[in-house]
Length: 508
Image (spheres, rainbow, N blue to C red):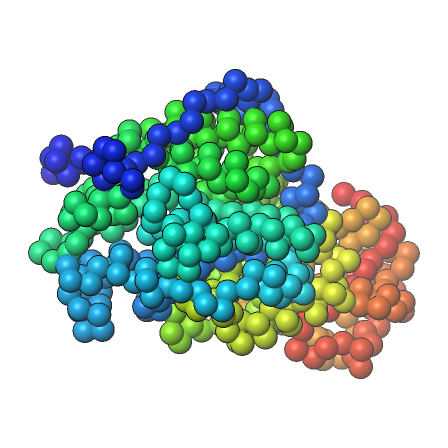
């Protein structure tokens, strides 16, 4: 049934109110213009991106106060989770999502301490969420009072993170999911709510009824979206600006191109490299491609620049009882992604008070220690001609080899089963640098012999084999069946992948 015009109306706070929708600044004169041709002609993937391989995503916001379900709590409290919300906080018309903001204090938030942890985990870039679907800006904004600088923590979270990230020599990125906000919290029929109270119009929108990621955000909302992009770019100079699914519709191309032109023109003016990161075909040029969740990552070598962002637990935002992946699972995910040519952007989930829990820290520590010993085969590497070998590693491109840009479209079996959580000692992942292939065994062998069938006699000519961790040379022989390597079992960590460096005529 066609929706009425009233349902698609969207004006925000009254004109002139301090939280009315913002007006963007006039477009820059260039050099990048708001056309696909201009974005294409002025863009190149930043030199820092492909070599970095490991990034950290951070979902931290008001939704961590209830810590229930997921970071989509503000949607579900008005739709499918009304009963739980009412039992714990009251009816949504009496205690709406806005009422969580004073409870979001972040009293233990320490940007430098977070970044130290991420650097020790092996990250080369860090991407905090600047604004999620809930519409609460995590920076000190001059455009809206509904921001962390004036409410909740009353701190410029994004500004503090940008300084700490750069101070420790990492690359600063941030994300905006605001384009989903225009329809994200629309209440289910009959649910009492505070969504349409004019007192809160500057925060709630009000929302419109069209489901997720539709193309009908009002012109005023779109202009406000652009104004916030301009403010983020001008205040913080992100070297990657990540955007979620809300920007996918072609109907938003005119406003999206104005945002791209602003980002890239400012970067050229100020002398730094930047990129966008988007899903599906939201941006035809000017971006790196994002796949969502390890199960959504490409399962074969995917050309071009891309990353897979995946949560450390069963929610992106912190929830009570979060089930956290252990260090082995993180390294297994990393290897699956890097062997297909991508970057691994692992999401962490701080609590509302700004503390990153111990179980997440423990997993990050394991990954970081592994990368200290094996990072030679990860950082600055490329995909080889095949991603690996073994019964649980794809031997040819599957039908859905490109992966999934959003878990909303992903078959559940992909979320649960990829990459394989119980690989065998015959499973390997490959990466490549000039003159060398790195073969990462996903499980320590049962015997002193390792066989790599891909590198049997008659294929690559192997001149030396060594452990990546420590560089110990290993005895080997090439037979008609396989490259057979003498494995020093006593030197291998029994519960973690190990790396072998194969040198010789292994060029692509």
